[in-house]
Image (cartoon, rainbow, N blue to C red; front, side):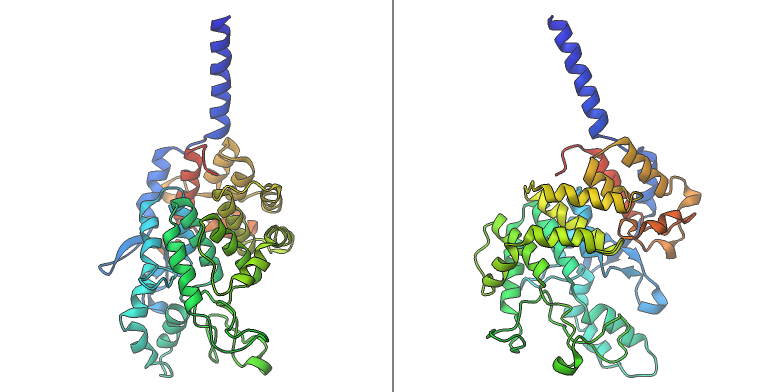
Length: 371
């Protein structure tokens, strides 16, 4: 009887392991690591990045979205990515898209480039718009909350919330506010011919104000959840956070139906993972994973959120990521995080990939105990 029990236990453990772990061969992951790019400079620690057009932007680091992607990589144990998020927050609590963004904002680079705007050579305008005006966005803030949750680092979250509190605009743009609405960053305006797709919102009333930095209700709902999870003190915009936070799962449910495939759906998926890291178990989170996977069945991140570390997810990763040196994209094409693209991109014979997206999925598949 005892031996029968032991045999049944071994069978159960074997089945459980098969369903919960599906590691990718180390030779393949080594291939990805050996070809993935780092943004390197003596002024910051090397960190994962995409490839940029050196001639167009004056740097080979396309790190505008790396606060989000490095947060994802950090959550699965990539220490260089964790260091990148750590170095993206300055001593005042101001958060930047990457350590490089933080450095150039404070070393005089942006000031000197700004003086050249208007010259016949348009490089200065491109550089300033991409690297100096847009230091953060709401999706980077979602990534930061993932980093804080995965690393259990409430002190940095408190620093950031304090910076938001201290940097609310003084313009009375919304009736009833003595201060303007909270913002993730300071540059809410755009200039004519802005090359980053900046378009004035309500120009007849507010001029060239885009509200690109403003904490929107959905953003506020997640921030309030993170604040409460880590017992961060109330802020001077607490009423706004509380009102939005009361409808957190309403916002996420609506987004799961309305967000477009690709970038917008990926942001929602990351949001749901933040909540899972914080111990949330609402059925809405499983429903988000179900809808995301149904809408983009070629996205292994969405399938992982729904099913966990299965052989099917592993096989999908291998089918979408290069598995031999002749399939590694040329350097100039290592500029895409595939899991934020629409499934139509999966049909390409040799899709662009930064390879860190492949490494991220490999790390997810290594363990069965991720949230």
